[in-house]
Length: 353
Image (cartoon, rainbow, N blue to C red; front, side):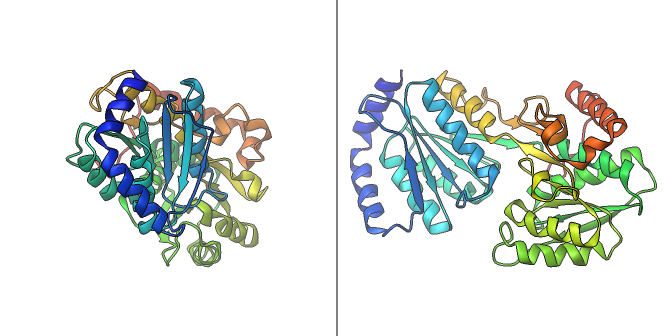
């Protein structure tokens, strides 16, 4: 199936491919960086584009792992383009469609408008947009979002049971609906086990680089600590290092996101959410290759789909260095809540719904 579809698209898109290649060549490297496996003319090809440079961002790295797994499973090749701004995201998309791959995967809410634009412009190309949703998407644009509120609820349970000050809250990169799913879920979980707990409105990192500004994140976290919160959900991506430094200095406990961040500040990070972007990439791209339409493909990933979890519930939890591992009685309640969410007995509020 791969080869017939790919050759057909290649013939239709030949003119567009030449133009896009010319644009990329003239960009002088502004399209960011790319990395690819060895390719052959007949092998199915898959492209993954990040919203920002991967660096130490486990969230973005997970997508790369996923696309490479898809390529290996289908005897194909994978290529990753790392973006750094709006201009490079566009030029990376132009370079991607020029290669006429089986699927182009985009990760990050920053691709929302571009995903819609390119999907409409290239109706024979399959696209996957992960971590955000756009209205009016054409049939060649598959979308997958996460139910971030579910694992955040579990962390909130930990916070509600372990707080000594009686105050908990979140520090988030931006005040946007996507990140509010974390803070709202965290607050709801805390109140589910401790009705008297006070939940403070989130502190926003902001600035020019809210997802990777550790200095500014530290300043904001120190300011937030003044509210009395001793359990703080750090929803700052690569900025979290600054929040963890503040936790160590000011004596509060932090919770991380996207991957095991407990090792970044042993003794100060209680637990964290894990976003398995690789699982989403493998699932949705596999469904595309099986001929499923966007309506038939999986579009929402939470605890039940294993698209999200928390560090303390993984197989590697014993070696995670997360502080919560010292509280088995807390983990027992967290496990029960996880099972109840998966079974549908607990439905965590989605503030974006």
